[in-house]
Structures are given as structure tokens and as C-alpha cells.
Length: 424
Image (tube, rainbow, N blue to C red; front, side, top):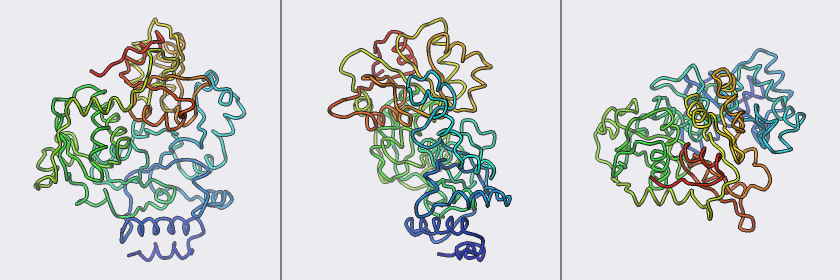
């Protein structure tokens, strides 16, 4: 390890217990990753906010953190929080979510206002409590800035969409010290595409981007893919593919020529080299990926959940238009960020949801907070949520049946209680 004099002092405890434990964690991460130094961060950060993240080997007693905050210490870079501790409670909509535990005001308040949250806020943390901070941030990193992000859909958004640099390394330690292990996507040479994945036909819809991302994740392993055959990139589409890439696989970086800031052409994405492999994903591969997140034995639906990753304002608008003047036959949850709630209310979307019998929830998701009792079949518009939800709440003795489709498919299912979605 090549440490600066300042880093050595922190590691030796000369700057206090919290900084020492942070340095110990980052040095250990360097050892695991094969990094020989730390990089100074000049972008933004986020980390999973939970008291449990401050326990264990690198834990910080609450008293130490309070003393640190009272001394005026701040996070070194602009830092956002992920959600509150498991089981995650909603920030809005909890009063009518249908889960007695979460509808208890005292239980909800206890988890939302636990002490670590107030201390972190005092130190400058933006307590945004969302898996999609990049959708609400008014300050984005620019090309080449080193960041420390942690959420599965967020990491490729930083790398591939914004051109920032991050691994899946967001933590209190990195954000507080403003340092991260120098490896992976922080290193220019590691960011170039090593394989090419082509779609047999041009992919235009959110559903196609979502399913394609899952298929790419499965075949890419640890390679950086350049994706060819993508059209009309929008925020919602890139959010979908980012989450799906890290559901089917583990892809922190990809290139879409003409979209990724570092890859205006395929040649630039590959750094002028030949790819190790070129793959073609056609209808069969897309259909196979679709079938992996659809396992519904009948057309009956008793629950619908939208918004993984959390919906942006345009997504909320689109669902509001689909629900306007309609009534839901089964329970419909719509997930977004806490900071988006007042916007949705001011735009009239909240009233439309309420009138339709849908519930706007913020700061959580079904995989983290659970679902109402008795749910046997659920419809979702997210490959990520559809894939993981059965791992959380299904068993051979009590299977949870899941179907995946478009926003339109899911809203129709909420209104009719029947699933009519299909691979298109």
C-alpha cells in the first residue's frame, strides 16, 4: 500500500477512532481488490443508511459518531443515503399500505427517525432514502470525476450514463474520508469494452431494454460489454437496463455508442482493439430471459407493484394518465423517492392515485418492506424486482407467483385483477 502521510496518520489513530476505523476498512478493501493506493474522490457518494452498517469490525459506537458530529466534522463529498434499516418502512403512504406492522405510527417513526440518521444528517448526509438518488440529485458528477456509489442500478448509471467513475464501493468510510480503493472502474484501462453484444433487432421499448439487460448480464460475466442495437435512450430506459444488468449479472460499466460519454463510437468504446467475443441476442434469448421472470400459473392477480428502481416524475405522470378515471380491483403500490412525493402531490398525481384506490409509497420497496398477507400472485414492471421478490417471499410449500410486463400491462391488471401481459 502506498499511503500518504495524512492517510498514515489516520490509520495510526492520530486523527481519532472513527477516521482510524474508516482507514482500516479502506486498506482492507484495497488488499482484497489488489489496489495499491487510494484515490481522492471529487464527485459524489452514497451508502446504505442503516445502524447495522455501523456495527461489527468497522463499527462506530453512536457516542463516537455524536462527538464527531458535534465537533463539526462533515462528509468529504456530497453524500446521499439509501433506504432506512430493514425492514424498510415507507416514508409516505404507510397509513394505508395494508401491512399492520408498517401502519403502526410508533413503529414507522422509530425506524425512520433512529439516532444514526440524525447524526449523519448533522454531518451533511442528504437523507434522501432511495435506491435511485441519481434521479433526484440536482448535482451530478461529470465525466472523469471519482465517486463512491453503492446501489445496483446507480453504479452503471454513474459510469456509463454520466461518465463518472465508481465501483460498488459506496460506504460511510469512503464518503466520510473522501477516498476509495483505486481499482476497477476508477482506472481508465479497466473501463474500455472487452466484448460486444448485439441485438438482432433494434430495441426501442422499456420492456425490451429491461429484458435485454438481464440477458446481457447473464452472459457478460466480468467483462465490460459494448451494446449495439439500442434506440431512443431515455432516462427510464437506462434505469431499467442498469438494474437488469446487475440482476442477470454484475456489470458496473457498459458502453452504448453515442450515449456513453466515453464511447461516441464502437471503436472508442473498445479503445481501438478487437473484442474478445461478439455475441448476438435474438428473439429466443430475449424470450428465455422473459420467461425467467414470469411464473404465473393462472391469469388471476391479487397485487401489483410498480417502481423498481424508484419511479421518476415522468413515470409517475404516465401511470397517473393510465389510472385517471379508473378504479383498481386489486391493491396497487406505486414506489418513488421521498423527495418526489410533494412534486407528485402538486402535479395532481397523488389525487388521481387516491381516487383510483392506488397507494403512492416512498423510500422502500416490496422486497425490503414485505407485502400484505395472503398475496399469492403479483404483477411487476421490473425485471429486478420480479427476479428477487420470490427469493424473499416464496417457498416450495407456499409459492409466490410473479408476472412481469409493461406499465400498461400492470395497471390493467390492477384495474381488472387479470393478467393480460405477454412478450412483445
